Image 1 (cartoon, helix red, strand yellow):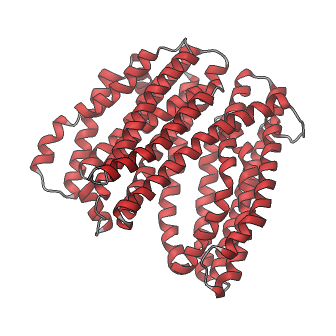
Image 2 (cartoon, rainbow, N blue to C red; image 1 turned 60 degrees about the vertical axis):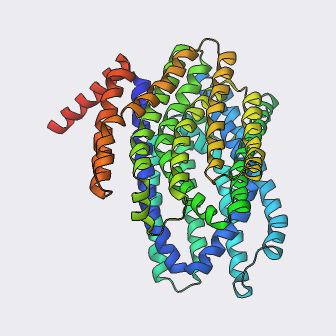
Image 3 (cartoon, helix red, strand yellow; image 1 turned 90 degrees about the horizontal axis):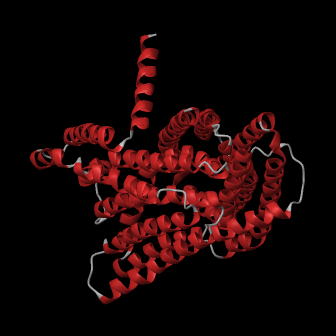
Length: 508
């Protein structure tokens, strides 16, 4: 019960963090664009992307660090936990030095010889580049500390520090407005200062509260080798998925032109925002799933996986279904001139989100075992095979562009089936039928709940009122269905406890 309360509390803190970040970022990004101007803003994004291309290895190592720290923490072996943290820190310092060398050689060459930057802004671009490299070094060496906070499930500290972070972003905007210095250099300098301050706060918190974060340089091949093996296979899967995303855009460009890329970009942005709502639930469940496997509490692990699927998909469908129904009106209201195919792309990607979140939960379960070779190979290979399939379809048949996304949707469903089979072979103690039922049951509930709103869809003209009515009615029907049919007695009891506590607090 205490662990379940911790999951709920952590999810709440992560939502607060996300909403704060989205709200402030929407405002500050607009003001920064206005103050810097399109040229300077473009230079900043372009230069930053050069640095970002060298961070692919760090992305894979981040997942490995979080998994191994959480695993050792569950075993309550303080010596191994300390050695794991210090090994991870050494690895990330090594990655930071490697990226620094690449950035100061290949990166600088690319900046001077391949990027199209006005001559009069080249000096500012070079300064921004060096500041961006410094910021990236801080971010890379910060990974073990952030992973430790997640492993200890101290998500509240993320909410508190994010409050400071967004406040400092507002300060950056104010200084930009009143500053007389070169706006581009000033902005990059301020961003670096904020990054350094936030990293410093996290590190001080970790050193003060977690003994394992006291630096002690050790070399433990028994720890470092599995982390590298885990990250290298994870790297193949991550790179393949990234290649699929970029490759799909490239193929759409080949057959339909740049207008389709604009539609794809808008749809992808909407997909990313909506997926964030379920991502917070995953972040809250992740440490508990890994810890349950580490101490061989398979029944609890099974319940955590089932609950993560139920609550993540429930959260997504509450938002996604009304959005899918009224996406044309909402996009017109938001953008005015909506790129052709953007609404249909968005609908398909929102449906993919639902299968994608199930995929992510099952991936966490496999990552908990540390046996990621088969999963990464299968996921990466299927992701890459999407590209020739999409190309051949468009080359051989006269099809509309959304068929590219139908292929991606089919591969997402296929990966769920593959992961269920892998989990069955790796963790025989888990009831795959129960997990599969939770996957299908909550999706079926979401689809059935559309039936009562069909008269509203057919009978009302598109308007904000219609969007609100559809959202409220769908929410009530879906939640009622899930409460009585999908959720089990334990889930219902937990919800009742939360409601009772909330009502008591209000009365006080």
